[in-house]
Image 1 (cartoon, one colour):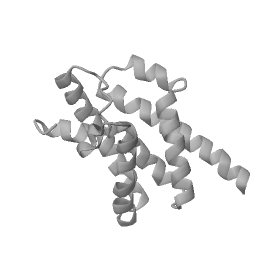
Image 2 (cartoon, rainbow, N blue to C red):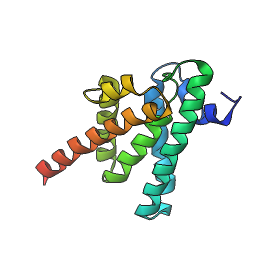
Image 3 (cartoon, rainbow, N blue to C red):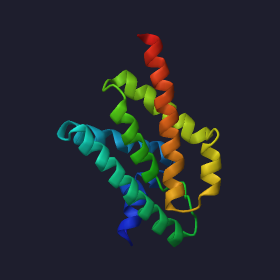
Image 4 (tube, rainbow, N blue to C red):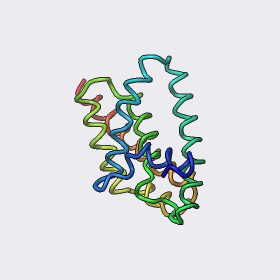
Length: 152
């Protein structure tokens, strides 16, 4: 993991090396990152940061996937980190909403309903690694938006 900076990033600073549920550990890494960054950044700056982190992930996951010979290794969790940062940006900043977002995001990321599974199987590059989690984030936000509307 420390041979190249891309590996350190792709493996979520080591969270992807967890022996059980590395994707869940990577998703959890997004929480303290969000809590540190969100209060210090205006909305456009935060979204620009997420876009930059997405681009960084395309590079890091591409380099790492080629180096280890597995395009989307389970330990590469930067895709979960970035996608969940985006989810957290749009979700109300309460424990209830963030927990619901976490559970839904993990559900969509694990089950990969269409077209997530299609993107996961079709795009074999750093972009593909990052893309399917972005779609899982979109699904999460759509479900939460419907829930929020029903609760109002």
